[in-house]
Amino acid sequence: MKKTINNPVSNAAGLSRCGFTLPEVLIAVVILATGIVAVLQAFSVSLSVLGESRNLLKANMLIMEKMADMEVSAITRGEVEDGSTSGSFNGENSSFRWDIKVDRVSGGVAAGAGSNTLNQIDITVWRDGSQRRYTASTYLVTEKKQ
Image (cartoon, rainbow, N blue to C red):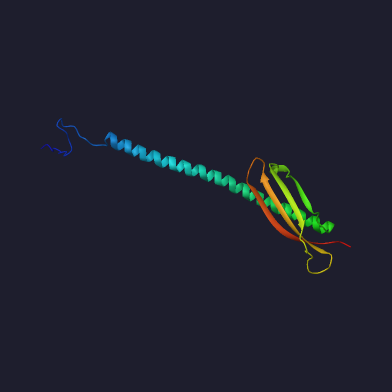
């Protein structure tokens, strides 16, 4: 006894019509391509944000380094000089520049001994060729050595 398999999807010539049509395949390719383009754009944006985040973190570290230098200078010399100074960092941070502005706060005699002075220190750090600048301000009390 011979078994016959009936295929409900067949054409007049007896050929099976399983698979996708050309318009279905083209629509799937367009949808897939659109998804890939969106993922690549998101990846590109995330890389640029990562670079900016790295610059912010490094600038923050360099600002803290300059503030520590100012504090050491104030402790050893007993004062910080008013005015602006600028320069660049050395080593692996040579692409970064800094600017320090020191202003004596008017009437800024800190509590305690009469020789204490209150200074406002503004430190700005930026990378060469970048428009973005990172600035931090702090106040530092100095005590003149006798």
